[in-house]
Length: 259
Image (cartoon, rainbow, N blue to C red; front, side, top):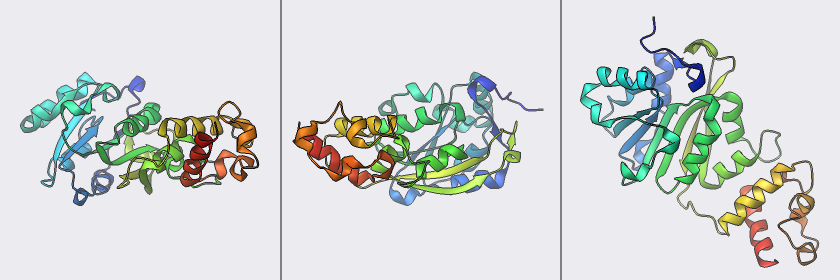
């Protein structure tokens, strides 16, 4: 019997395969220079077992589930000061991490996008992420322009991180097994993680473009552009899914210059 009950409202599916746990942890690349790692949603600690044996970095654990938190305190008494009972999405990272750090986890699938946007909001500190998501979400993160999976999340993540799809995990590796396949990805922050454009406008352009993805950008961005000044801009004749990150940066600069 499980020592911690998997709770549906928290999207918990506990990984039980130790080999897969080791593969996920080995996806981290501490040679990038981070000395601290935050594990999100450790559950019963299958990743934590591997992480806490590593000497290249110091591991912190955060879990919103009080039952998991109490289990982890008993399981890892030597790491008690680094085990946090809190909501990752509400966490102020600067209170704990003063330098770059990495994030790892078997992430709850019901808040996948929120987790990734939290990472993006803290890209000045989060140098790497290795995580397990629903396969569909993992593929969306790594999708290339022109594919139907390519969307808002793909562009925003790839604007600041190199995204690699590492491997797929079948449902039988979990308890309880999810109804979907899972995928593990690695996000490695770009050396330059600010864009050469008005970043606020960039985000508006990307969101507006994909919110009406069947329209050309000339129509989808009608509230953001001066159509007369933009003239025959070729990028506006395309749909959002055709543009690379560099194209979106170029288009943002052109819109900014012709308002």
